[in-house]
Image (cartoon, rainbow, N blue to C red; front, side):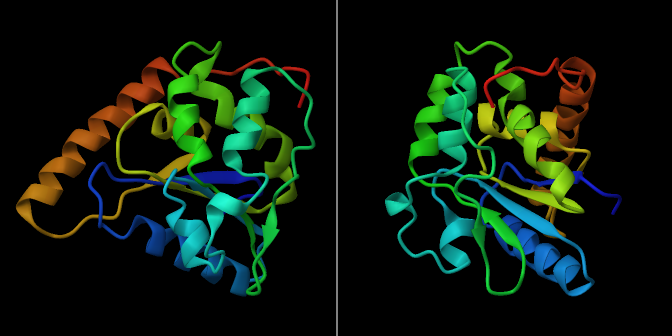
Length: 189
């Protein structure tokens, strides 16, 4: 993948292997000598927990912290809270704080681009950024799609999951048409 590219791993259905896909993709790219950032965009913090941080709610700085600072237009060090995994990739963790951000984005200016604004400050330090999304297609997932250069949709080879994937592809296309525009840089990050 070209330098600084962002990939969102998502599916509106739970249990499809989003987190497993994100972790394995990140580990594989790291083994190939790439600098990788995994971003946990799920308030349950499954990626964070799966990578060994068993109490994500005790972490002081997470993706939710960064997104809140951007919404509040407060300066904050963009790499604060990035964790280093023993396999060589970096992790921006998530915890329950991120669920409050879902509601906080409703009235925020440029609400679809908050994650993109944070990623713009850190992604050039990486070859690849992989965003592990939560299942509901809410504002957090829309933010991940707006920030992503590409999307991976893990799906089982069965009728209902494949049908759900077709619906999700329509949503991704809608985001591309309606939201994916250049966002002016904001101060304070």
